[in-house]
Image (tube, rainbow, N blue to C red; front, top):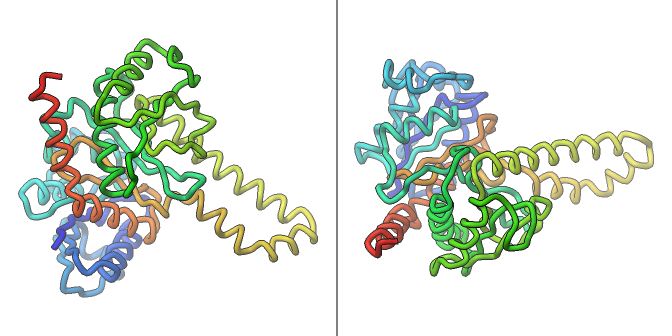
Length: 335
């Protein structure tokens, strides 16, 4: 049985979509049990009894605009997010899922769950939409503005294992986001990262990738520093939202456009689904000793359900153990 800890009070619309998404996951997957942490009085209107659901009550939780999560952790460890993480740390659950503030989840990961010994940095690794609807792993999307090339190589090794075992990609390829496709492009750090990725025996290196190809590339994993990849991710989100608004505007522009849209209703739904982040779930906080999934702050029930599915699949595939083994092997060889 896969044991999951859920922060019931994290997110812009918590607790309703969190509870609903949790109940949906319990309905869909018969090999999981979930412990839900949060204010039971606020969650009660949305709860249903389930033999594989346990509730741990705490009236304390983090606001989405929290600016000092370190102070919050030191002053009140009864916050729902921190209690869920401690539950994982104590061995009672295999993964945590939260839609709460990202910075707090990173802080809790460092103080409670702890980093893998072989990982020098932690990365935020969402799966972003792609033209072929299979998704791509993007990292680091915000945890590290400053980086060293060897950090990105560790992320690439981790993501390769994740792509193989969870996304079921055969020999997944790793691309380095850069300002051009030629080998000599970019900053000195990018050039050095290119050389290390190209030479690594466990990485199938695609080469440099320009941002304009992020949505259509055949590469499975897209690597960059936290500043660059975060801009790429937010640009994609903004573009998708803008395209949707333009499409609505044009559909409403004339009676003929409205009639045409009625005939294209199924195609338009597929278009929306292709760009919908809720179809994917959340972002993995890559580098901790247990699976930590950051669901979108604005998650609705279906999006949070997919974040739980993502955590379940990570645990099922034993990704943490495989990554730890791969990176420890590298250290033993003195690389």
